[in-house]
Amino acid sequence: MPRGSAMGMTITEKILAAHAGLGRVSPGDIIEVTVDRALANDITAPLAIETFREIGAVEVFDKEKIILVADHFVPNKDIASAEQVKKMRGFARLQGIRHYYESGDAGIEHVILPERGLVGPGQVVVGADSHTCTYGALGAFSSGVGSTDLGAVLATGFIWLKVPPTIRVEYTGRLQPFVGGKDLILFTIGMIGVEGALYSALEFGGSAVRGMAMHHRFTIANMAVEAGAKNGIFEPDDITKTYVKETSGPEAGYFTSDADAVYSRVIAIPLDGLEPQVAFPHSPANVRPVSKVGTVPVDQVFIGSCTNGWYEDLREAASVLKGKKAAKGIRLIVIPGSPAIYLRALREGIIETFIDAGAVIGPPCCGPCLGGHLGILASGERAVSTTNRNFIGRMGHPESEVYLSNPAVAAASAVLGRIGDPRELKD
Image (cartoon, rainbow, N blue to C red; front, side, top):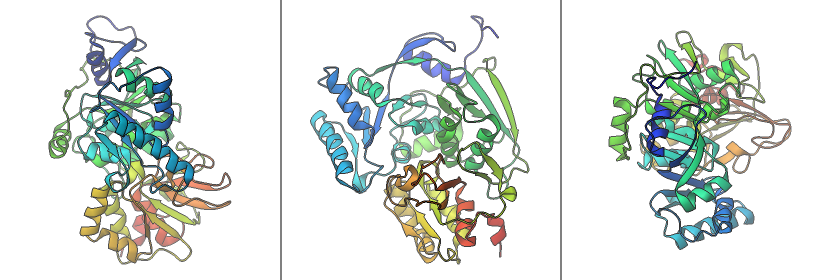
């Protein structure tokens, strides 16, 4: 449908237009936008730093707007990872970058940035990590970019982007017990496929979103990229504003989509009756309701990651595990998303519940999500994981298998020794 001059814009288009200094933009436009935050981690920063130097840059564009986080191999697991962090640390010191985090001051980048009020509504955030799209939960345009692209951003503060078309996802109805953001996004990816939103903005809305807690929104936005999306985004509302106020986050602007905004597609998803979802190997789109899983024994359960390492996720998992033990032979690994989440869970007895259940608690980091550290799978092993990807070899050996689920299903699976429904454990 051609867009006339009087047609409205989506929230994504409005944010990009504002940062390009334009009155309006349309899908397909190539624009140069200013960047509010530029992010990299211990894996991606070294290459970005090399690019920064290769193009002859001497100083970063803004010492306050760059965020570097060591979160993938924490603590350093070998010489190679130690050298990576050393390079990033040295660059941060040389450039006087204020927001550099590692060790006990760090945590998972996509958790600590919102938690510490470093990102907010209306911003343009780019990061050398595909799950940078997480911050769209706050109403920001937030997208992952390559490390070489980020190197140029570090020097200039600008990036060239093609304005994506927007797909609107309307969630209606009410969430059922033990169903959350992870289930909504898994179901959505299962419906449209891993390329169903290729270089599109996924805009999440509908009656079910009104009143939805922020941790669910972060989870949904986090996995937009698993459908191929350029970004995932929610229109900010009172819940967003409360969160931003509590975290003292920045407010670049509270944008909303116009009533006559043009969408490339509108998808309606009723939630009444939606069960917890499980993604089978080797794709986040290979989704089944938990009642259709069958008998799938597992060797390891991981609860954590930038997708489900939030305090509320740990609390839900602990509610399922309370007074129970992980089945014999099951390795249960729990990693809080940040030191603040870890401390709160410790003070409220949640960590004690995990330890009583037989869990190993790891330091706040990405952990086994990428198959790099703290919970690698051997040949033939199966894991239930609250992470975002289950590609071949994602968490270890290429002949291992990863099943994605929400925290409650993961906790129940640890007790049952197989993928299971938390409702099976009702007293």
